[in-house]
Image (cartoon, rainbow, N blue to C red):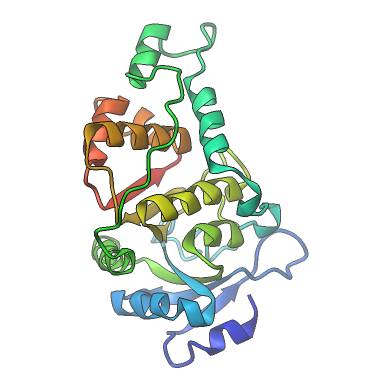
Length: 270
């Protein structure tokens, strides 16, 4: 991040520091991190200034808030050099590929029998149903993102503010070198490509990121059972742990009910 990027925010920012990535020769500083907890007003003001500063604000949560290193952010466990460009990936193709992987049945190495495993993704089974259609924005995505940031900070008051030079929140995930989904895929740019598509189709905005969690505000969530099932299928392909290790019952249909009309999407990778 070039120092001049932050100069447009002079007077706004609390004490903080540039974070150097663990990888390479120590010359990559993809992130500015506040020294103390963020406040809702600061996130909203830096978010409003994004068009001028080029810096996307992220509410950053730590693996252990009591750990002075504030991992992975304060410890520099970010890897921007490993990431490709989100623009080089097709989100529809990625989701179809991930769906095929997650629904594949290995009778010799599967904790669930074939019938029970396919029941998780019913009514689709192993058949990729395709992308959900775009929805009309009836809520302002920027206002909703600000409201979500305030709510998130109420629930997670030790969260800090991070600033990343990126044109959007989706692209900030790759630019900062976040490795949250590394148990499934090391190139976060692929996940960024999908989130960028959600920004267009559902008014998604990246608000908060943790060690292996991602939190989006959603201006145009699915409202019908069919829409919600299609979106749930995308979520399963994107982050199967949301269903495999989420709330009972561990099925696509139950998950679809939970996200119907929901203005926030939360993801976690185990």
